[in-house]
Image 1: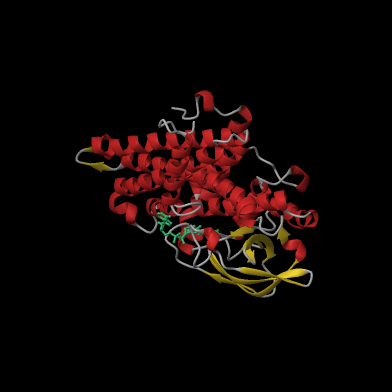
Image 2: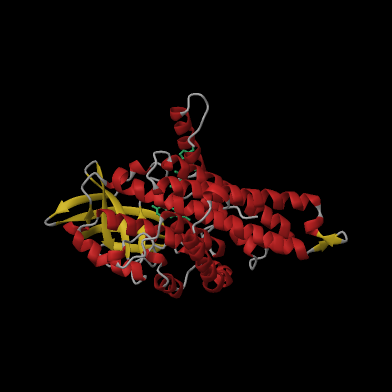
Length: 389
Ligand SMILES: Cc1cc2nc3c(=O)[nH]c(=O)nc-3n(C[C@H](O)[C@H](O)[C@H](O)COP(=O)(O)OP(=O)(O)OC[C@H]3O[C@@H](n4cnc5c(N)ncnc54)[C@H](O)[C@@H]3O)c2cc1C
């Protein structure tokens, strides 16, 4: 069954790129995902390959060497990479958020400085908002930026920064007095120390780090937009792309769970038949197949609405991410169930996918924050019980 058939079908060119993305994943990513997970790191080669393929320029305008994918193509890229490895998809997510923000808000010299190299994968971006004391409540960040000559001095700590261990440039949010402001900070800035965070539960190869800013001096051109633009104008839209990317990545993870489960259930014999013939296993498979189709359609709907800047796009992205991430966690748990003890081996993709799926429920807005935001939206827009369409 083609889950994308009907009103939400793909154009010929979108189907063509999806095929290309899946081929890339099948050869360059999927065979190595478990090894990278165990090593807790990604080789730079995969980043270089993604840059060469144009994937890291997904949200970068063509004039800066980017591939300027349409929003559906960007989603399909995230799904395809998410089938192979959620750590790789995470790097695409944060790099795309940073490149989008620089393209939209960067001063001309900052765009010229970063975007062409980011598009080629010679320079990778990471997104630094969270802090030890500020997670879901991002408005509570305490990292400070004080004017100093023609630039600023940053002090504070950022935590859980995806690809922080290897990224070349960070999009950092800090307060100038009360005004949350965004800065583009090169990795080699004096006063910036990168401290790796190892052995995370999931997306273990995404090379998470803590960033410590101690009297870290950046030039005035590093400021993105204006003082006070950081949270609403810059982090907000960047996180919306991030959420959309994670939603599609969760669809990819769901698809991988379905494929792994089907393959195992068709060859494992117990009680005289393959386990795929036992009805309780069929129930797990049918739930998984239905969830992946529904999640993909929610993502497509969110993409179509975002494409036209429809007012319901924001809520549609929240819903897509909520449904896909919670569905991915259930599907991954069922994938381990179907694999039995074999699914618990360190070499099994099933256990990696279960750990990766839990992370999807935390990043870019946790499950609880999504529940709050979606219900607020439903209550505000549909007093008669209708939700956003
Ligand atoms: C693998 C990984 C990668 C990450 N990458 C990045 C990155 O690249 N850049 C970055 O800036 N951050 C990153 N983060 C941090 C991530 O954004 C935060 O984990 C997330 O915002 C949640 O914050 P927290 O972990 O501090 O949890 P908290 O906000 O402390 O929440 C703890 C629990 O309480 C719940 N909760 C919080 N508020 C409410 C409420 N009002 N009502 C009900 N329940 C609530 C949450 O849902 C959660 O279950 C990453 C995290 C992980 C795990």
